[in-house]
Length: 341
Image (cartoon, rainbow, N blue to C red; front, side):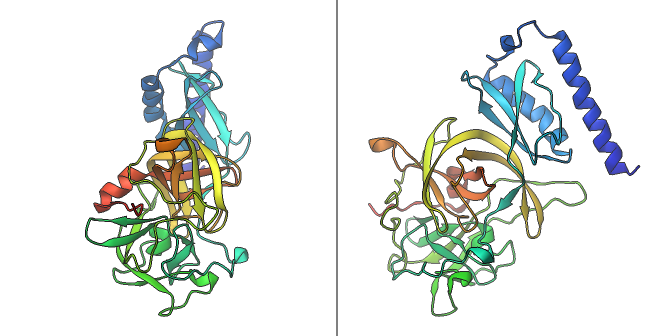
C-alpha cells in the first residue's frame, strides 16, 4: 500500500468514525442541529476542508443554505457516492453536492464561433485572448483613474503564467480568427501568478485575473445588444441566494444564483491543479461554458441593486460556476470598474 493510499484510507476512516460518533451522540430529532450559525459553519469548514480535499472525489467546500434557510457546509463531489461524508458535525449539517471536476473555462476547439468579431470600440463580454490560448472573454473595462484596461483571467490574457508584460492580446481570440497584429485590442499589463499543487502541497490562490492596457477608442463599457448593458461602478458582496447575471463569449446573457460563499476549490488547468480559497459558487445549468472565462458577473435586481459587479468568472462544470470576488480582483490591481458613466 502506497503512502498516498494509506493517507486516504485513514482520512476516510476518520470521517466515517466522526459521523458515527455525531449521529450516536446527537438528539433524536436531527433538525435540532439545523439552526447552526454562520460562525459555526465557517469553523467546521476551516477545520475539515484540507482533510476532505485530500480524499479522491472531493473537489471543494463552501458555505451554503439548506431548504430552511440555515447555514450548512457544502462538500462538492466528482460523482455520486465517491466519498461518504457525515450528515452532521459539530452541530452543523453537511450537504454533499455532485458537480464533477471544476476546470478553467477557455474555449474548446470544438466550440468555435467564427462570428465573434466586433468593430472598435468592442463591447465587453466578447471573445479575446493571448496569442497562446484559444479564446476567453473580456469581462469589463476598468481604470486606475488615468489609464484604461481590459479585465479578464490570467489563463485568458496571460496564458497560464506563460505570458509576458507587453504581449499583444487579440479580439477576437485566436480560435475565432483573431490574428496578430491586425486584431490587437491591448497589451498585457499585469497578472496575478497562478500557483499549482505540487507533491500533495497546495498553495492557496485567491484570484485568476489579468489586465491589458487598452483605450476607450478600442474598448467600450457595455455588453452587445441583448446583454445587461453597462455594469455599475459600485460593487456588491456575494450573498447566498443573490440573483446574478453575466454576458460571456460562448453562452451570452445568462442568469444564475449564488449558492455558495467562502468556497475552497480545486480547479484543473493545463498546467495542473490550483487550489482557490474565498471563492463564490453560482448555480444554474447553462450559466457558463468554455470560452466564458473572464466574464464579469453582476447582480440581477431592481434599480440600484441591478448590474452591480459581484465576481469574475474563471471556472466551472456543467451545473456550477466559480468566480473570484470582484473587490479582491480590483484591489489587487488598484483599479475600478469603468461603466462609462
